[in-house]
Image 1 (cartoon, one colour):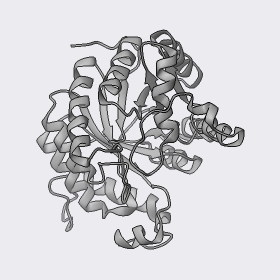
Image 2 (cartoon, helix red, strand yellow):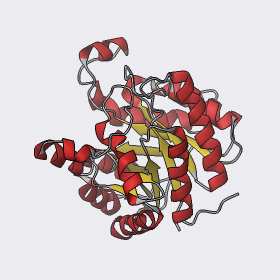
Image 3 (cartoon, helix red, strand yellow):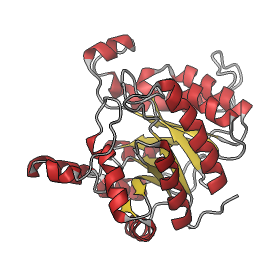
Length: 323
């Protein structure tokens, strides 16, 4: 079985708080470590009431400090929001504190509203600088050249795998040209998955980072004791917006007009929802179709205990080695 990891969107729930979410994040990571998951990644979103991981590197430190062996990463850092040298320093620090356990996933991000862009001290259109910023960051993570004046300390020479994250064809092409690991956000951007995989695999250039393509695909997984219970839990993700995460709604799909339902079904078509047998079959079918080197599962479930149970079922269905 290939490695299976977790992408935690750090959801703030209705009636909850960021403090509660961050406690639940660490609890899930500790369970994930015992259940045999390979990585635990967190996301960067700003001005988003439904997510508690805006300060992604800080939350990673919280998780890494409370676990022992699981890899902890960013899935990802939206590089246009940051100076590359500061990302190198932050992740170099994490790599020094937790050697051999830190991953750096880099994304271009999605267009933000003008007020958020201004708050981040960004300019319209600066996402076009992403390829240059990635190469600058990679430069700061290399061992320093003789006489190099500007250095990332910590950061230079760090044991820090870099992944390029994407939800489109352009990101796949950039990852291939730089010879980097590639993670595709199939859990929310399914439309270009096939084209992106083909572009990355066929155009991959061997590099000092990798000898051959390495692909991780995200997948929404909602597991419960039965298919009906899982579909109820899944209604939380189907309702999700940038607002705090809502509780599940019985028969939610029946309440939607056909056009809205079709949009939701398309957005979530790379999802596996059901009881243990359904989960095992769905994951196996996804692996057989796309042949990734790794999958990373995400799950927007309202109740923390049910979310833990969902990942427990996934770990068993995937045959992970449990501690």
